[in-house]
Amino acid sequence: METVVSGIRSTGNLHLGNYFGAVRNFVKMQHENNCYFFIADYHSLTTHPKPDDIHGNIRQVLAEYLACGIDPEVSTVFIQSDVPEVTELYLLLNMNAYVGELERTTSFKEKIRKHPDNINAGLLTYPVLMAADIIIHKANKVPVGKDQEQNLEMTRRFARRFNTIYGVDYFPEPDAYNFGMELIKIPGLDGTGKMGKSEGNGVFLADRPEDIRKKVMKAVTDTGPTAPGQEVTEPIRNLFTIMKAVSSPDTLAHFTEKYATAEIRYGDLKKQLAEDIIRFTDPVRTRINAILNDDAYLARVVKDGAEKARASAAKTIREVREIIGYRSF
Ligand code: TRP
Image 1 (cartoon, rainbow, N blue to C red):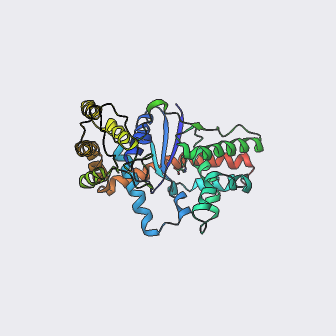
Image 2: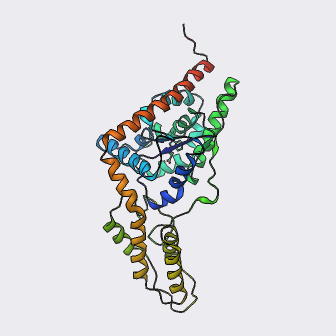
Image 3: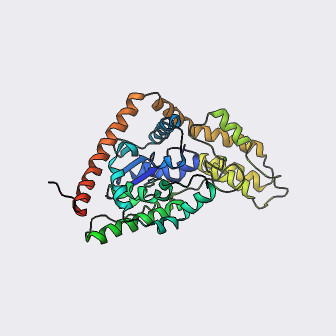
């Protein structure tokens, strides 16, 4: 049984790509591991959200993960800012984190390039806070995508450095959780690349059926095959990939055949795809809304989650203070 920690961006409303990428696997792996899932709402302050937006975003994202099947009876589900112990570990780790190495991380350099007007110290030390999130529960595994690999490498480095400086074997160096072959990459509707929130090419789990129909009908296609056996272009391949994830094998076979014989009508394909996406997301959307309407349930989930997370975090902080040399009088 491994301890797994995963932070979730509080502005990251879930789209189909997230679902078939990580979230579906979180739901599975929670039964085989000791999982901590939390909404990273301290991290989100690096982009200066308005006070009025913060709570609503957290609530929405939390409801979406719960609706997908993250089970607070099985996993520890909490809000980062409900566990202030993490800020103490962050402070302690900052003393052994070097400005030079933080400045060299690609995500920091990227953010400087994109937001030259907001290069705050929180951005610089973002990997330190993330390391604190992870090692405060002495996690062995972190499910990370490509974009977070360097942050996980920094976490390993900070854990190792702590152990070296204090001559202890205290923090494990966490590895990437390997989902094996189960990650399905869902492309966007714009004809190129994967589905992403900032790309504006996504179908969200909370989207209403009429919005899904509109988005899918507007998906980029091509002029269509002019002869049987023609090679499939990227925008069409992408629609087939989404279809493979949400539609029945018969439907997929039907349209694959129509393409092969050059009889396909993209309008029909899109109509079917939209209905299949709706059939797939509808129960999730219903659950999201039911959860959002149940304040008492949400309050209970975050309270219980915070209690469990704080117990684990407080134990680590006690031990870390001892290791560093703080003693009570
Ligand atoms: N940096 C992660 C992201 O942008 C979010 C995150 C914060 C995280 N703390 C974490 C992920 C700890 C895994 C473990 O997606």
